[in-house]
Length: 330
Image (cartoon, rainbow, N blue to C red; front, top):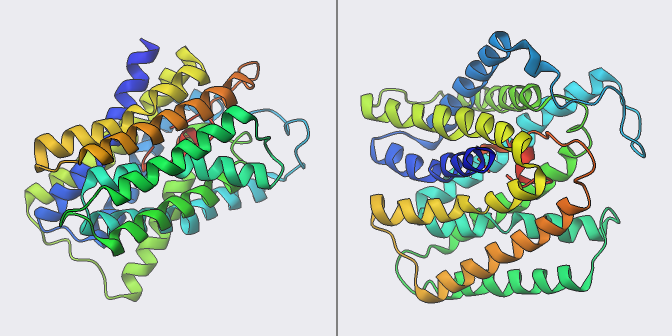
């Protein structure tokens, strides 16, 4: 059951780019998509907390973790809201701007380089160590990324879209590294609500300053927005938390690589997109490297309790991997 829940979560997150494409076809603008998505998801998750008050504390540590600097409750809450207001709002804006310009399947593969980026930065900051096996995985992931880009060759490749996609991955990397300072101090669903609320606030202010967003699209547009908020955010995160609790972080980390596979498959079936053989091989290299990196990381952490927020889906964005994906609100 735990593995099935993790796969269901990955499938829900993987479908988000497809829902986004269909929403664009229905006349929804990126600004409206983001504002409605985060606002609706924040309200729905807050309602979940009201119905299930035990989730307000599940997975949160009573005190500061060993080796971590003590932090006041007010500062923790401010960082959580700031993660959404600055980090996740920016990452999601870049992601959905890229989605306007490029195929969903290619975007999913480029975005999924973020676990590799997190590993590189973590090693550079001294938070992690680089073993020979992990070094080989990083080299393979880099080669795979080059193949994904160089193998495009068709009209579906958009340089600006690719730059936006990489910017989204870089922003998400920074978001994850900052989230690591508070992720143990709040329950996953509580952290997700705060991140969603912060993102909705930023996007609401942006809408006011830019003259508002157009919500005059038809029922089909609202349907796809509901799918993004409910299926690819709320359901995706809750099933991930439930699956992680039953399987442990190692299994959840490996199963999370199913997300871009779902995106590519649905993009082929629904949107008629396709990846070249070179891109497919590059994608396999990237996802295999991510699985190796996360498996080795989570094996060292299996002895500690872990129910981190999978935000960043929100990303949520979705997205998640135990150290990275489970911090999504995308």
